Length: 287
Image 1 (cartoon, rainbow, N blue to C red):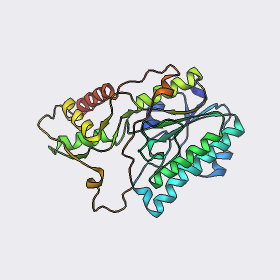
Image 2: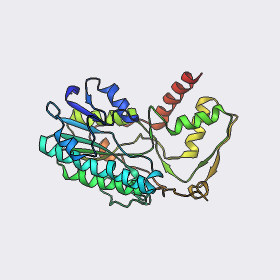
Image 3: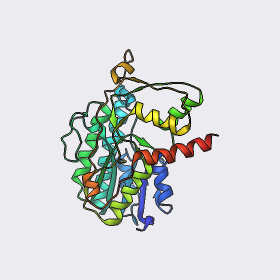
């Protein structure tokens, strides 16, 4: 696949950074050059020589989206901007790869399949669902729904390692159940779908392996990093956020069926294997 013809949006985020490593010749632009929330900016941009757009940009501040300004921002980036990209993709015959979230569901109907009806609980989830609906109008799209992303940048694993370095035994929610998704796994899936010219449509993309809670994952992180002297106390999501204002509701069940993706010939990696590699690397870099 000729990565010269790939354009990455959101190139400085966790996934975008990894995409640039995977596709070193891909094109990208900063917000001054291309503001995807502005229709004129998108329409006037030079799309010649591009055949695939990977949209890794998103408003991901879940709680922040519950404020007035955050609500506006979430809808601009997660819905309006996506509509702008769909329009330009239609006009220029581009393939659009778009990243979505388990938050488009309420977490009660598991495992989540690609054709499950939308049931978002939060402003963030609603804005992502709106973006999904717009993307589905475009015939040439790959819409990837993912969960619990870990890559370069601020993320759960690094936060827990930071607490461990300070000798803190944390209290972590144990009633949110799902799987980690490493950016390396997302990129493997994106590259597979594009390279194999798999049928267009929506695909769930997470790491494989047993379902686990955030508390269980934290225990694995501590064990892998050698912090066996620390303990992890279980709590519920309701207890963890009790008394706090502006907290968005979270789906408790994030079990995403991988059957459709795997039917294309993709072999999913275990989140536990990728967590071991990631934690070992992080531990070495911190020591």
